[in-house]
Amino acid sequence: MICFKKFTLREIHLPLKEPFKISSGTETIRRIFLLQLFNADGSETWSECCAGALPNYSYETIDTAWLAIKNWCAPRVLHKTFDSPQELNQALRRDFRGHNMAKAALEMAGWAMAAQLENIPLAEKLGGERKKIATGISLGIQDTPIILAEKVQQALDEGYQKAKMKIKPGQDLEFIATVRREVGDNAPLMVDANNAYTLDQIDHLKKFDDFNLMMIEQPLAYDDIYLHSKLQPHFKTPICLDESIANLEKAKEMVALGSGRIINIKPGRLGGFAESIAIHDFCQENNIPVWCGGMLESGVGRAYNVALASLPNFTLPGDVSPSSRYWTQDVVSPEWTMDKNGMVTVPWDKPGLGIEIDIDRVEKLTVRKETLK
Ligand SMILES: [Mg+2]
Image 1 (cartoon, protein in one colour):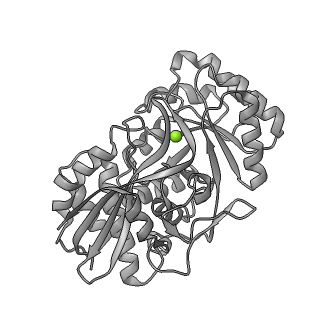
Image 2 (spheres, protein in one colour):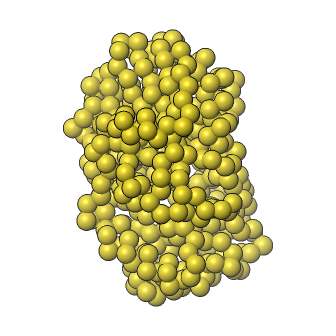
C-alpha cells in the first residue's frame, strides 16, 4: 500500500564537469530538486523533479515546482492511501491544471515505491522488457562547425548510438554539413531546434533533407501541433515533437494531423509515468517510434528514465548518458555507466529504483531543505 507519511524536499547544487551554455549565460552548477519520501510501512524512496532554474523549456522552474509540491501536490498525497500508482496519479490530476514536473516527482515516486513494496524492479512494474538501453548524446551549440564535428566523432568513438546537435538559425546548415562530411554518411545524427524556426522558413528547413538526419526535433513553436503538420509533408526528415506533446491528447493530435513521425517522451513533462505509458502504447499502435529524452538529471532521475526506456516501443536511443557525461561525481552509487557499445544496463537484479543514494554527498550539496508531514 502506498501511503507516504513524510517528504523531505531538497535543493542541491551539483557541479557540472564542464560549463554549459544556455540562452541566459553559462552555468557551472546544476540546481537539482530531490525528494526523499517515507512510506507508512517504514520503507523509503527518492525522486527528482526535472524542472530547471529558469522557465526556458517550460514555464516550470525549481522554485515553482517547490511551491506546487508544497501547496497543492503534497496535501493530495500525504497520509492518503493508494492501492496503485495509477490511483495516486488520479489524485494529483483532479481539478489541478499544469505543473506536470511537480506532479511527476510524486507520481513517479509512487511507482518506485509500489515496485519496492512488491519486491520487483521499477522497469518490471512499468511493463519494461529491455535489459539494456541504447544511449545517445546531446551536444549544445558549439563555437565552430569543426569543434562540433570533433565532439560528435569523439562521442561516436565512445560508443554513443546517436548524436543530437542543438541548432538555431545562423548556426545550422554549415554545422550539420561539416559534421556529416567529417563523420561519414551513415553516422546516426539528429538535430534539435528547440522552437527556433517559423513556418515561413520552410525553404531553408527543406535543405536539412540533404543530410540524412534521423530526425529534426521541435523545429516550430513549443506548443504547436498544427503548423508542424504544414511542414512535415514537405520534408523528408521525420519531425520529432518534444515540448508540444504535453499529454496523450497532443500525441493523438500529432498523429491525426501528420505533424510528426517520432515522439520524445520525458516523463517529467507529462506529469509522470501513467501518461508516459499511455503515450508509449498509443504510439506503438500507430507505428510511431519513441525515445526517452533527458533533462540534465542526476543519477536519481536517470534511474526513472532508464526504467521507462526499457518499454518495447522505445526503439530509438535515449538521452540516458552515463553519470560521467555531466558530473565529476554523481549522487548515486554505483554511478550510471555506459559500455563501449553505447548501452546502459537496466538494474533488473534490484527491486524498486535499483540505486543507492550517496546521502553524505547529498547532505554536503544541499542548499535548501524542507520536510512536509
Ligand atoms: Mg528537445
